[in-house]
Length: 231
Image 1: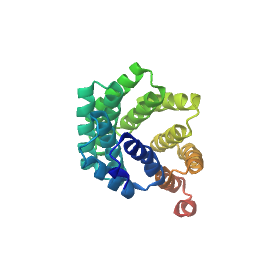
Image 2: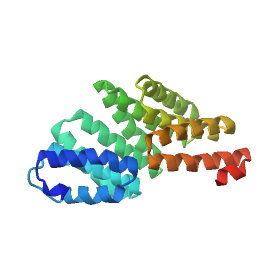
Image 3: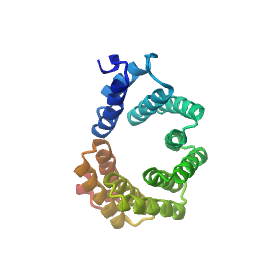
Image 4: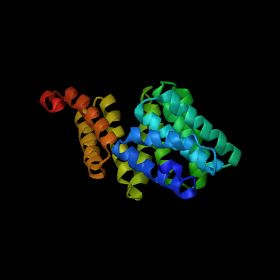
C-alpha cells in the first residue's frame, strides 16, 4: 500500500494526492490512506506528521466531522508550535477558525482567523493572506457585519486576481454573491454566483460546484425564478 512505503517519497505522494482527493471529492479513500499513515511511527518526522495531521483534518472537515477535524488540527498546531514553524502555525490557526465558524462560535473564529492572517501577512504569503481575508469576510458576514465583510472579501478578490488564482476568484465571487443576497440585491447576487460556478466547472472542483449550485438555488428562489432554481 502507499503507506507501507515508510520513506519520504511515500509521505510526499500521499500529500500530493491530498489535493486530488479534496478537489475530486475522493474523501473516503483519502481518509483511509491518511489514517493508515498516522498509525505508523517509524520514519515520520515531526514536520511530516504535522502535515499529514493537517491533511487529515481537512478531509474530516470536508466530510462533515468537525470534532475529529478539530482534534487533528489542534494536534498539528501543537507540533508546529514546538517546531516554531510560523507557516504551519498560521495554517492550523486558519483551519481551526473555519471549524469554530461552522460551529457558530464567531468570536473564537474571528480571533483564530485574525491570528492566521497576521502571520501570513508578516511572512509575505500573498495567497494565504488572501485566503485568510476571505475567511474573515465570511466570519463578519453571518453576524450581519456587512461592511467589514465586503471590505475583506474585496481585498481578497483583488489579490487572487493579481495572481490569476481562479479557485480563489471563484470562492470570492460566490461569497460576494451570498453577501449581496443578505443585502437583498438578488440579481447582483445571482450574477456573481453564476460567474463563480463557471470557474468551478472549469477547475472541476465537485465540492465547490455543489455548494455554489445550492447557493444559487436559494438566490433564484428569492428572485421568483422558481423553475430555474429547481433544475
